[in-house]
Length: 262
Image (cartoon, rainbow, N blue to C red; front, side, top):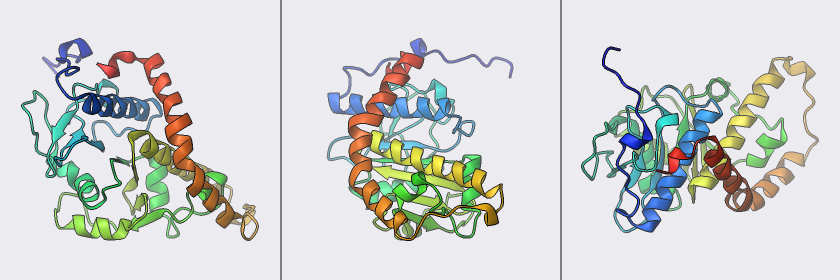
């Protein structure tokens, strides 16, 4: 488009030192998550969102600028929004309040949902169209166990009244398959949320590949194995995410392009 210019991280005023250390840390981690979503090819142009709660008593959250690609998102460009997705502070960036409907519902209803991530990947959407959803065919899927809710499609998620139904369908689970729509994960931290989403997306990809060979050719796990694996996942996935996997991915994000942390 005539007049459109690439956005450089140097053009975005840094907020480091202008916000609390806790908020800056949340910004850096969330920006890294955006970059890793782009790295894995999970982005959908500028659509879908990853959000994180801003530490503190206010109901404020961090959300991506609506007009940036995920590989352009930086810690300073993230927009601080209220529970309705409206910018709290003056910002040069656009926001998408309608796109925050899903996130705001979960953030406000679940105190443990410090991060919420939602994707529109081909593999995730393909599984969301399967009548049985995610099947316990692989270790990745079995580790997630029954920690997955389902929400029926109601159209583009812009209706504020849908929030109550989203929350009810999620219940006390930390992941959700949005029927005919995509995948979603929550977590007590950005890292925990991302790793859960990673396992969910990988499980969906593996299921699609397995089913391509025909259901009659599948080797299903023996009785009891999915339940044991789910217990193992419930006990260890969060610890592995926070202490091992996410720190490793954060280092990878710095190697790929450290501008996300500006």
